[in-house]
Length: 301
Image (tube, rainbow, N blue to C red; front, side):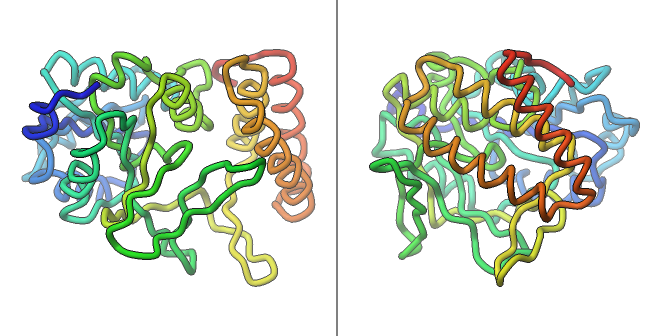
């Protein structure tokens, strides 16, 4: 469990994973984090751009850059960052995507939410995608149904099954007990698997309504009957469907969660087959992902 000293005097390292980033947005992200954390680390996942050289030229620069020679996946890159943060004596890590922009007080709000929750696995912000009409809700499965927590007040701290990785604040003692991110998933369901594993170890994740972040989820959404449905590339759909099935094959994952998520996956399979363009590519990649998941195939595709 995190100690009182950790909570009172947090030494937070922000870990930004990049892959062909928009450098102007990355610069904004570093600038917004500069006064909120002790250290900023960029882990570059094999981008063509020389991120280390770019960083050195910035007025507000990250404290360190780890340049990986190839794209090893989001989980392995996060794990490399977590290991560096451990070596620096960090009490917490803050995981960030390259295209997320935290509010000026986001990290402080996340820390405040953790103070009286010694069994907290992590805390994450309410994020806004400018292409969506409303902030996505926090998710939790209850009584064999998906429950969508919406922030009724700005000070709500809501229990959830998992959080998206970007903006997720994790105490280092929790990582030491729960373990790092599962790198054979490569991308997609990495944050879900870790959140469920933390719950399996007796920890609880929380969504913090007073912590805010701008974040773009996937590509341009599909407009359907007045709703905007998130859309990813065919390759991301491969990982999404494969990794979902890999989690269904994992013994400790709650059976109730498997059933509810599998039903949602079936609905996604039908919806994206009909409405995601190019339809054939999405259908083929989703189907291939399902088959590879059933076969137990993991790693980079």
